[in-house]
Length: 467
Image (cartoon, rainbow, N blue to C red; front, side, top):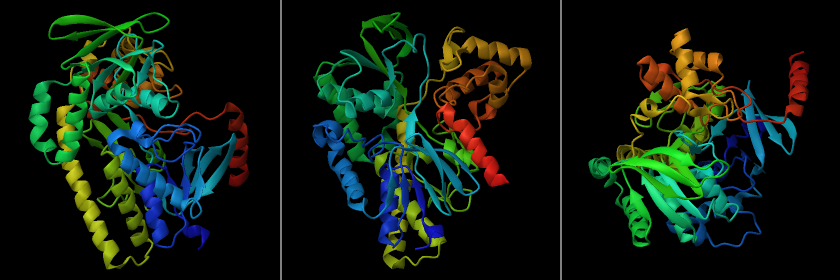
């Protein structure tokens, strides 16, 4: 096989693994790049090889699916070019810049499947930078990868299905889960029920988590607004506002998250067109039903192109691989063409179910109005809500990239992955616009931090290649 025809896949989660498996079945040997040490993605994250815990204890109801994904990857190790512990930090002119073991190199590609997954969406509240406050994803990493809890008395706050899943996983593992405090209301969830009934098995799992937590004495509270974290050098408690006014709970750790946000930085740097998805209140790269992006030869799959869950990520990865094969004029046969149509129907059904989930767990509509001026929005640059409001008022900035240039919001280590949504909410509120109208932070290299010592060598290589 010609090196020019070797497809590259970024991300070895459910989408990337199924994409690789599909390409292999049709005679191609893909290059699979993943930032993690072991395949599986965040949802099926594997602990170190020496870590002795059963899949049932790590993944619960999803143990069988997790095992199937892991086994699929294990079965391909001798057939794919697999690069774990490898960060893709830039893309330009048909090449990916990657970092592995403190060494940078380039990977050429003609066809690229981007399966970069998702990370937490966080809405800050007072004290959220206190040691002991973790994102829900961070709490999961501690449990699955390191085999430990984030604290001995944990409160989970925010909204979304992940809130209850992580709380359940912690409680099942023996942690003391003090409470689950959800900003969504019972009315939200009842209104969403008809759409959620489109996938009764998935709904039943969610109801089981809730029932199990209640049965085991975990306090579940809806219609909650986080107020502040207590403690100076470490979390000692949390204050929240509900129907009975302000209340306080003692705890030594907090898991915080408002659903997930797609990791779209690579798609952005690749030049993909974006659109605002009102359902997910997020800017997402455009793709067709098969996963084709607006850039020829670039395909998008899984939660990195829009949050749809692990099952849909597997289907989307397979469908994107079939699209790549079709575009490369590789004969698929009737069975594969039928399979492609089936996958698109499954993805469409899942999208309709997602409408219900977003309705059941909406983002708070009054968060920006309630955010105090001294609330830290961008922890990397120590930019507060008040800083953003004053800058917008003084300069007339109404677009998020202009506000970034004037205030440095989003210029820290996270490159806006944690603070972009909150900053956009603040700007939208103080300028009388919608979040869509203020725009999105443009991605730029490096996508994630790289060692400073590599900057000069990388620049020298670029100059040499240009000459």
